[in-house]
Length: 128
Image (cartoon, rainbow, N blue to C red):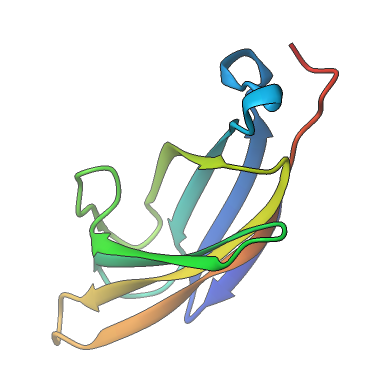
């Protein structure tokens, strides 16, 4: 698990290779990742947007941006957390992801960029 803290917002990520859904001989590797966003600040926030940089070994880095996470724009009061699971497909069994969230402080409308720490995507070819 990797973790980053930005202005009291803690982002923790754990990635898992999904061998059951992958086809290495067809260059199809499936990974899931669980993210927990904890609001350890004194302000209420809402997650508005996400931006990912997805690197696949030997290939170009892909940028993915969009509103919210898995169709949601959660509001986090101080002390609250939000956990979700999403996934990524790679053509190789080795890659990495990192990114950021844009959150709004609801008290004053200020936008903050929160770092999603870089994490590795490594296929365990013995995992079936």
